[in-house]
Amino acid sequence: MNFANKITLFRIISVPFFVACLVFYTPTKAYLRYLALIIFLLAIVSDVVDGYIARSRRQKTQAGAILDPLADKVLLLTAFIFLYRVSKTYLSVSLPLWLLLIVISRDIIILVGSAILLATHKDTQIKPTWWGKLTTFFQMCTVIAIILEYPKAWIVWGLAAIFTCISGIDYARKGINILNTEHGTPHAKTVNRTSD
Image (tube, rainbow, N blue to C red):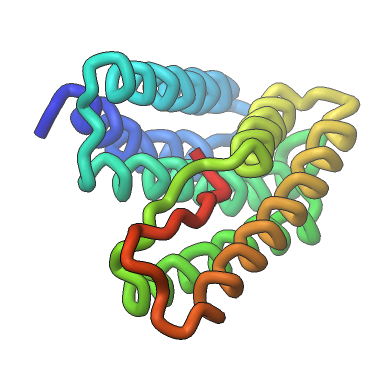
């Protein structure tokens, strides 16, 4: 396991600690909210760092190609799910249920679609798109805005919702196009992935 993959693994391991801070948070334990924010920010920084190391040191691996987007999805999905509960109970800014459902639905579509593509087109290469990068960016900003109880968080999560829908549709369209090819081509096809 190279250094970039170890950083990705750190991001996955940090998720239970982030969740624990949210689960045990109460207004009398305000420090847990800020500790959750610090863990989340460290996870974001680690995402940027491992991507840079993988590219600059040519440490891209098959394991990294799977673990990196998986780490992002685990981090963001758990953040949205547990923040929904915490924000409804304790915070002045509440994560809307419809946004949570959009995020979960998109990721289910992506995971199911990826499994189908890997099963039927084993030579398919998955690469990130700008729609996916913008989706991830605004979803992360939404988490930060809610933890900080930013009064205009609705603007941030509105953008997150828009890009989440666009990237989900974009992914589904590209996946369907690949599945519609009867036998594929001799060379590896590329489907753009909608997360980093």
